[in-house]
Image 1 (tube, one colour):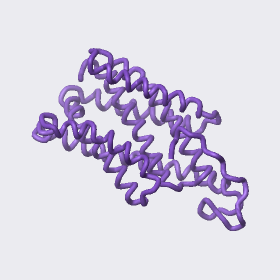
Image 2: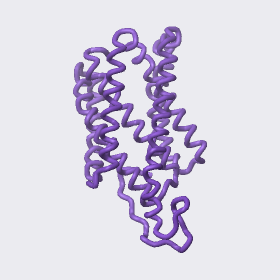
Image 3: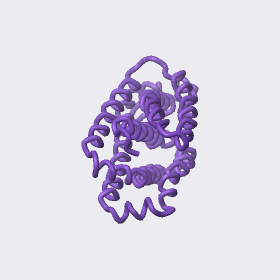
Image 4: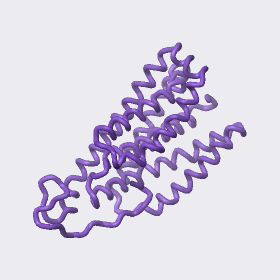
Length: 249
């Protein structure tokens, strides 16, 4: 299921007795609209659960110097750094066909992998600037909540922005590669990336809502939506940490 593609609406009528939402009959979209708030709360709940797993794993590893040393001084670091990228690329295409339990496990496993990847960074900030870490998390949470609320409530179609954001991500990836060779470029990556993923939060929230209204929660949409919003949040947090953390690398 691709969030960047428009979805064809379902017909306005359904056979008598057929329902796309529990307890609702007749117009399937009417039932879905009644349940969309509850569904979106579930999506946000799963996203929060993923963030909780990430935080627990990061905090556990970051407070153990031996584990952090073993992680960053061995080839395991490359597995921790690039493993989540490969894993999520494969997982997203398979999530709609997984059983609900397997989809949930896959999402939480990915969240744990991100926690491992972030552990050295979290350890550095805990040791040198814990207030910055807390401030960035609170700032990211506020920005995420505001953009998600906008995406949920706005009547404006954000599909065109979604296509623009997709093109921006490719440009951002190119700048990220350049940052390995040109000092200081990553600061500009963060400066562009933070508002980019804030915008994606609004777009993804609206898209998840639209797909649910049109098709219901089939294809593990709740977990897939939680994954997309989780990725938006993590990127916003990392970019904000870079901007507020000054020259820390």
